[in-house]
Image (cartoon, rainbow, N blue to C red; front, side):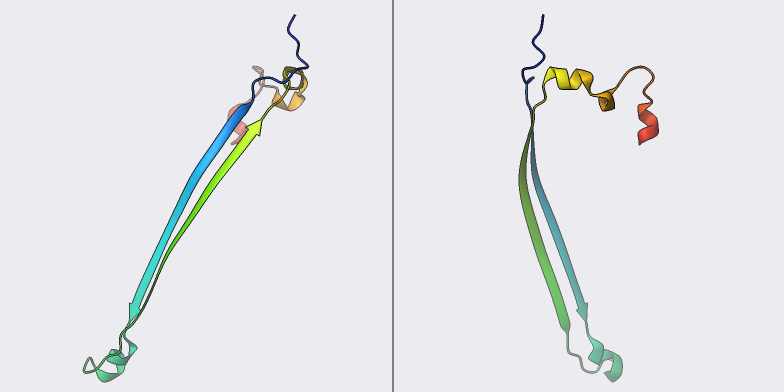
Length: 83
């Protein structure tokens, strides 16, 4: 008989995420009023970067997994309707 009270093999999840955002803009409002004869250029830019490293360890006992009613994945479970 299998001892279901001992923890099952843990599941280890690692997420290494990088997000990069860049934006820039330029305007020359003086050229509007001088009909292009003179101008003062304005510009701005931004380069942003964010990095995350996350680790998760999930460990359940086999007994908990077998008895948890929320994990019922029998043939009557319609997994497509939950999306």
